[in-house]
Length: 429
Image (cartoon, rainbow, N blue to C red; front, side, top):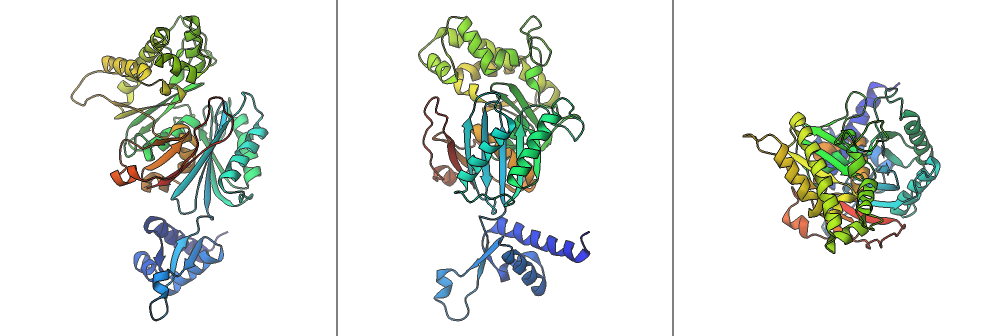
């Protein structure tokens, strides 16, 4: 049991860490002024943080040249207090590592074949994270881990269909990495990331829809991530759009996922006489003027837009963010979606929701998993710039012109079909 003294010491250390994250390197005098702690309490707390390696002390070169005893500057040790976010998608593992200062994030991802065993996927996550940390990752060195998985995630004991699989993944991650794990639905975590760092940064009412091998999404209402009573909030892919349509794996018929998932769109293109085997080939077909591809996506976009309009009538979002690989189809998909959305949503003085492509690319869920571990990020983080697959993603909202011009890292574009890890850097601005 913690004593009152221990609780107070922990609170003092947490206060100093927060100040160093918010203000950057500070002298002891500056920390004392900002914290309001007594000199003795301050020095005890700083000493404890230095002893465990969380805080480093240094003397700036300019201070060394001055007369008298130079003032040490205290800063967070970027190698300590790392946070890890992992996404176990249907056909890929993606990770994000945030340093102890909550300033720099590096991300990586690697595709895999469907049905890869849980243990192998966890081992892949370890290899990706270890590569991002320069081979310095050790069990027990992470402060916390957030994990995004496919399927509903509710409170413990309230997700009987998916819970055994999720419990297995959480246990394997906890054993491999030696840290506590928080697990949630992958698209819900991507929603969270987009409202902190991405296309909807700073917005309070956001609907997110991901068009990938599955179709799902998430809701942020009044600034809070909505999970639902049993963790099923955001399952927009299982709204029926065609009562006479194809059967869905959920047991329903004609669900949005049966027409708007990657597999369904490619099947429709081939049924129309097209030959696209994956999304890049579909995008190439669109660029070449393939009318069959344009017709398929116009029909899919109309279905999506009507679903978004119906959901908008219930929750009234300010912004709708579209994510997932199919968004790479660009205007051929986005314009039919926007047309159907604005045609079907009830007009009124309040206006209509704004439609935006996601700003964080594949890294969204892993970044959201980190934010899930550290709720303070949801209150204090500002928009980062993310490099993914060789492209620079800058949110359409809060980034300043200086931040937009600043280079924050580089990575090589992935060749089509390349299964090597794709890495990127992001710096929280």
